[in-house]
Amino acid sequence: MKRLTEEKTKLVLEKLTNIGTNVKLLLDRPDGVYCFRERKGRVYYVSEKILSLASVVNPDKLASIGTCFGKFTKSGKFRLHITALYHLAPYAQHKIWVKPSAEQQFIYGHHISKSGLSRITENTPQYQGVVIFSTNNIPLGFGVTAKSTMDCKYADPMATICFHQADVGEYIRSEDSLI
Amino acid sequence: MDVVNSILQNDIQKKNTHKSTVVNKDTEIETDLGTLLALDYNALNLKALKYKASSIIFILKSQPEEYLRSLTRDNVQILINKIWELPVERVDEVIVAKLPKQEFILPRARQIPKARPLTKWQQFAKEKGIKRKNKPKVKWDEELQKWIPTFGYKRNKAIKQKKWLIEINNKSKAAENPIADAKAAKEERKSKNELQRLRNIAKAKNIKIPKVGLPTKEHFADSQQLSQAMTIARASTASLGKFQNRLPKEKDAKGIAKQVPGMKRKAEEVPRNLQEEKKRNTNLADNVLKSNTKILREDFSVPK
Image (cartoon, rainbow over all chains, first blue to last red; front, side, top):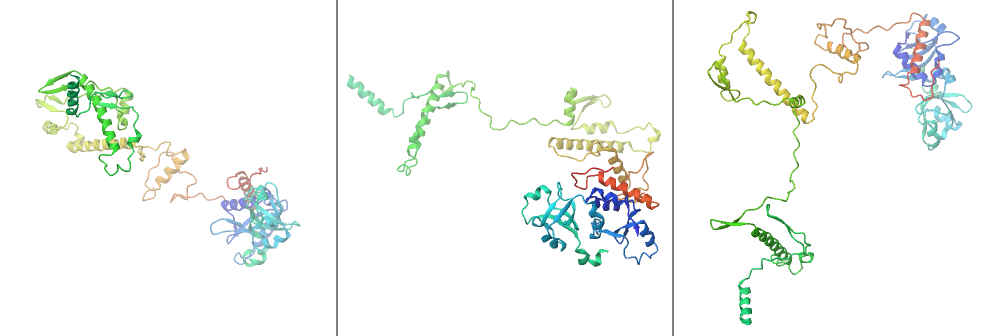
């Protein structure tokens, strides 16, 4: 378990703030101190209490602690994992709601087309990190808008509105690599 | 008598196969005797200029040819008539007329040549008003008691005669070879001149050449860049700058430890406890939110 270096923390925070500026609240919580830890390229979001408990375990044997937020790719970029959804969904500034018919498509790892779009937050710019919700407000995953809200109006039904980044289907599809 | 006269005239006309020297034109022909030029502004007979089907076979005697020939003859006749009006004299059984000065201004066939761009020295001399003095070709030399050319043929020989021996006044310079020194100095001057010549050519033809001498503002926008360049340059020797001297108070540039071999990176400060780490992380988050360089965000306000 390593502390994240300043550079790497910056990368992680840049990705998180792309979803919502309020993500800062994740660091400044009233219910205790939370921090980021890195192991084998994965970044974990851990509370102080769990961290002290984990220090007892031999680090070689430790599989995972806290919540895995994502991993650093080989090229040094940070990629969000679906496991971070629970913590990030409440802070999302820009949201996309998906029609029930398109939910399954998204959960299978496809992009969201205009036909599957139910609602979208006003004034969402292009290439903005967003959280995808079902119509009854259950978070489904992360995405990046391919078109801004204004452009969505005039897009044709098959045009991609949002690029897929992570979805809850990954809990089953890539069970072993998530942790 | 009338009959006789008419017969005689007929006879003359028969003998005189040449056309008359009087030519009638609708508009006067403009002539310039100085250049032996005649300008005919009369309209051409376009019908006569067209080839007819029957006349193609005898091209030489075709109608347009005939027409042009007669037109030219008439115009030349007028020109020659005008020449006859000039004062004429006889030189060795040849009649000669002196042509007046040319009036017609011929348009120039080629472009007017552009002024050659000034060399750096010429530019300077022009600004300062320095004028070239003509040196005499030969000078009287007291030592040799003869005229020595200031340049060129026989100059070098005279100099050699004059400077066959060079005194050394300074004892400290005794070990040096003054003749070799002079030779080297001359070579230096020659190559400097060559460099200047080439630079003038490059300037005239607008060719960019690498700059020499001390770096200017064009090279480095600010002092930080300059110090970075200096740090890198120092480390760019075979021994990674180990034997390079430093200026007093000279420091290495910051933030380029990665590029410069042998330069030690400052170790990152490790937070001592979780509280400190939390503080660092929140600060970082603030910085990330402030800098909108990496993330596209239209509607964002920095929470404070």
